[in-house]
Amino acid sequence: MTDNYDLVMVTGPTASGKTSLAVSIAHRLNGEIISADSRQVYRGMDIGTGKDYDDYIIDGFSIPFHLIDIAEPGYKYNVFEYQRDFFRVYKSLKERNIFPVVCGGSGMYVDSIIKGYKMVEVPPDTGLRSRLEKKTMEELTGILAALKSMHNTTDLDSKKRLIRAIEIEHFSKNRKAHKSNMPRINSLVIGIMIERDKRRQMISQRLRQRLESGMVEEVKRIIDSGVDPEIMIYYGLEYKYITLYLTRRLTYDKMISDLEIAIHQFAKRQMTWFRGMEKKGTKIHWIDGELPMSEKVERVLDLLKT
Image (tube, rainbow, N blue to C red; front, top):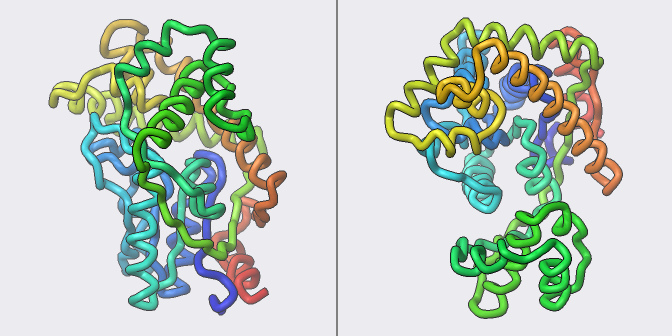
């Protein structure tokens, strides 16, 4: 059944039920889960990132998962590291004849696997950054244009992106940068589609559940352990807004309302990213998220046969 594909990728916007579907598919295929979630990599960041370990138990069987709880909070894990770690796990599963089921909604992580990004590992250059920070967007654009052909217009989206692009080019010209060697992987990409109003309802309900489950206390515990609040803000969404509340920059009610709006906006951006992937040639097979689980699984298994 799986001869035509190297893996199944289950993706979609937040709160769409990706984990449950991925686990059900893995159960049917003698598979294991590889996470593609940029925040579930952090230990102790459980409620806010939606780690429900019970989701990995089905019919009394525990489905193994990978690339969850692999970094300490406070660390800034990146796409280069994810791609490297993904391939290590992927290769191990293939050697043991176990079918990989990738699950996550972090668009760049997903795309880095499907498209096999050739990524460059470049350490930050604080001296160069401080010099570039003083320059205008126009000046930075001119510097970057002198260093490389301007194929990737995403480099121009913000000053931060421009500086990072210059930093990469500067490093590559002066030292030998380590490039990832990601093989092409034939992926069956499954997207879970939830109607907009239903998705908004699910997001709001899940937020209330997470707050009742101790999400504020989780963030406080991480900060109390010594993690800089500004790093927590860097992680975004739940961790950002709860940290703003804990540091008295937001009231509790304002924190909840702003966070709810931010999660809805995030889900919209996720869908925009997936549509962009489709425009660039990635085939995403969309499945109605409100179908019974058995029917969703059968549809995926049927697609694997084609």
